[in-house]
Length: 193
Image 1 (cartoon, rainbow, N blue to C red):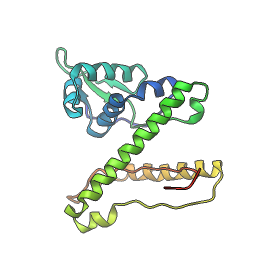
Image 2: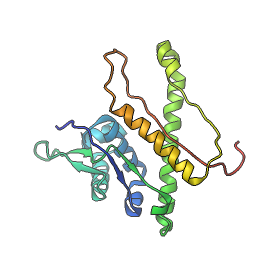
Image 3: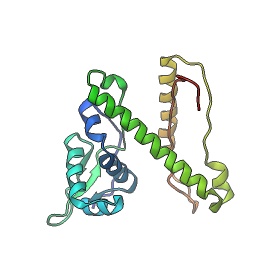
């Protein structure tokens, strides 16, 4: 099985957004990106579903270029991997399609839920980790007065910082871990709860 890491970002069109906006497909793609290549059977076990469903949804993801077969495996065993490290999409990509707009909203809310789950899990267990990790991990927020172009530039620059750290060699320390980083910039549209 090939363990080479996928590279780059794929920009999704309206059709790909509609395909990805399904709970099992979104979870399967995330699992492949986080945990590496898998068969439909191993992925089904990880996700708590059936092999047939996982196999079907992997083929749907492949139909829009989000996953591909590795070409390895024996007999009927088919290994799948993501085609890219990440994907992007923009509201302008779906403005002509009410279904794609609804799918885009679902995907964004799904990713926000995943972020909340990861944060809640960390905060519930951070006391089990050493002080260095407790101090290093966390969130912060700021309120800035920006126009749309300034907001786009901010997100682009923050994303570039993340990319610089991706290329940075890992230290020799024993406590190197995967760290989930989210870049979010949302305009204020009403009072926060």
